[in-house]
Image 1 (cartoon, rainbow, N blue to C red):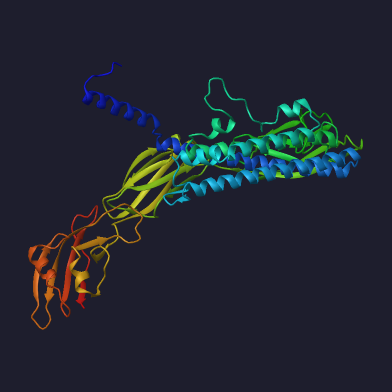
Image 2 (image 1 turned 60 degrees about the vertical axis):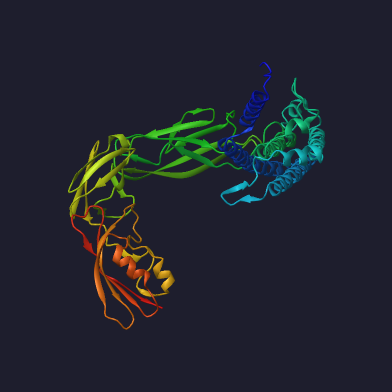
Length: 506
């Protein structure tokens, strides 16, 4: 770009450059929300790993108890030590997350779970770079990795699988060190998933260490001496004429084993990778029971053990269900959503016909019903192999409640508050549909204190000219009566009478 000679043009160019820079720095709200979505995903993954680590630790302790030895005791203690060190590190990182959350203004009341100042980059730079917290985290990562490496006897395969590490700076970066590369000028929103990943890496590193300790407690596999047969049916409820199919397996059992035989009701089931598939086609409806027998040669004792368990599944016929999504009646003038399903039938194959109302298909088993006349409606639902009729009532929208200013019933009211009201509204209370009733008009009687009453018709919901003048004159002791309040709701052919309201001015 050539440099302009005119000061005004130079200023315009500089402003353009500044604007371009600001646009480049402006991160959208969607991106900021994505950071917190990523952080939540990491938290869910950590919870799963934590649960698995607990199960693995319990299995190590049980194996050490069942097959005691000095080596089993040693590596059981190492597993506990690894868990403790990782838990302390994760808690340390959680404290940093909470501190960052507080420094970023605390919880945003409009977005629960997020701090107020999520775009701020100065907070993270000062906290992690200038104040040295990033370097402290780096040292703790190195320290924990070194201790875990020692626990696994510096085993190359295990050490290489530990995700908790300080990676080398990429070529071409201007960062002077790891903490600058990770945290300098990073928005608050981006740092939370970064800290969460460090916590996840620590938990996954614990998993690698526990797997190593497990192989040392009792060889390369954990051998269980109690076994429970398991069944994983593709579905427990089948339609008459369909085939029931289930996977029958031995839980807590290696797929490499060759010392298991399975039969169902005396019928041998072929095994593939330790899993047998059982299938049969029922001839009648109702509950079907079957017994699984598993013979296992215990690799530890050399004896054969037999376990049996009874399972069941349900055989049914096709049926249809209709659910009114809001109320168990169809209302005139509004869209009434319904959901229709048929067991064992795709929603695309379900058809709905009606008398007394109109039905439109919205897809996915969802329909909209609209009516015009009170009475009875019959829905006929058909699907392959089944047809059913359902009868419902069709009613007008219930009478709304007339309220002064959309919130006041008949009562004594201060004159200032009364004058502030703009008219009468028809409010549908406890009605689940999105419907609006309009006031057509009403009769107003103004009774000034110690004077004769005067009456006038008011059209529409808001005060007309003369009525507005009467309202403005309200003073203590006056009374106002609103009678013959008429309104029209969606679907109404004629206006309906809602009764009246009365207010005493105090």
